[in-house]
Length: 252
Image 1 (cartoon, helix red, strand yellow):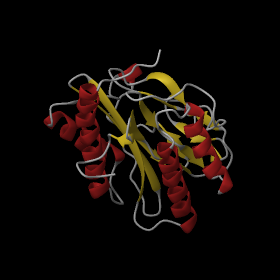
Image 2 (cartoon, rainbow, N blue to C red):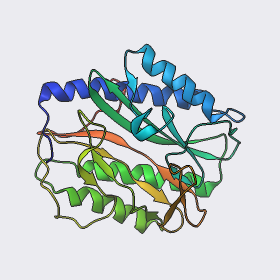
Image 3 (cartoon, rainbow, N blue to C red):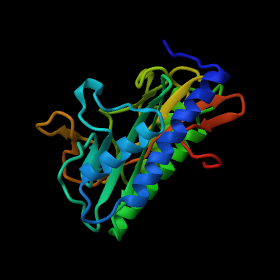
Image 4 (tube, helix red, strand yellow):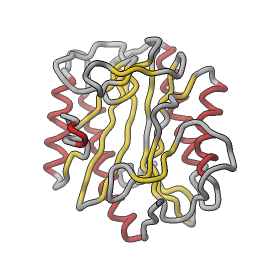
């Protein structure tokens, strides 16, 4: 069943979402060539706990870290460790926070120094696909309108959307109904109404859509070794349109 949040509950989720955005801002300021992904993870965990919240991913289904840090051909769920980041890589950073029992979730793909133009374009298209998906998150629209908007824009630009992984509802739990695919047909699926909160998260590949898991059973890579980008926001549907919760005050 799709849960519907009250206005007060959405305001509670906004606090969690704001901390998610602040954590991503911190990571974006600090990330640089030569840095180990474990260093970023430690910094993010300390920041989240210092603000009275819990890292939502750590311990979830035994996931061992605060962040998912996914480099180049890793789509999602890269486990932080001793790997050093290098100039020219793209790095998707996914953060989840639980604050006072409410969850927030967002992701950004970041550049390490100067990156090839092909990587820049992939990032730009993925971010725009998210924006177009969010624009469809309106009362009276259908879930498929979000999915179709993401898929259409990505494929028009020559990319593919990952089909084996999807976005999700979010609230008192990290993952709630409904699933939010990044592909689909418009005017299909559940009707959206005020109080529904969704984590919309395009995962866009430069090559084909197929993925594969590493032996650690978490790390998800493109099957053909192509680059992948990932952007995500937690979005509440309101009477006045989509309300992005994973931003700092005054942000978009």
